[in-house]
Image (cartoon, rainbow, N blue to C red):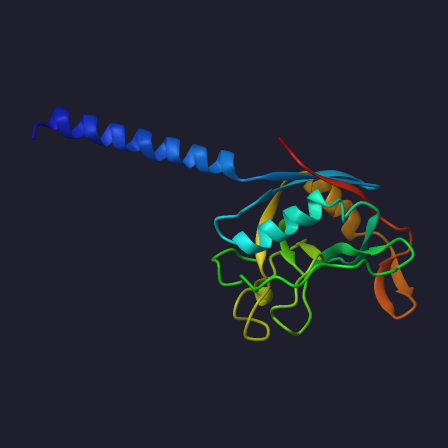
Length: 191
């Protein structure tokens, strides 16, 4: 094999890998959150968390998130939403989705993950966005299971930073609730 032939093949292989990577990035769905604090966009990773992404996109299609709030905000940890109306009434959900926390994605700043109870397979509609690297939530921590990351904020992290510092307090049995509700007006799948 000549050097030219080898170089040509390496170049073609490199181009093919680049094209595959570009096609992969184009296949990652993105959703836009319109909130009372501003808009942000999340890219989802169905290759890493297929059941979780399908679940989240079904809630998006069903407009489940419209009219919900960020009901739990802890600066230096995360902001959580997707399950409660402005009057702190929990919305009905579909059956839980299986845990996909061992997918290689980490609970790093800007990632979106599923909220759950102590049962690792209890995630339904609620999600949280990490406002710092939370390695303690990566599988198998903190309870032997971890929390499923399924996407990342790719635009509008300044909105999340605005939400994370709002004043919070108690509302009935709930703690860390923003004193002024931060509503999710819509979550829309981008074309």
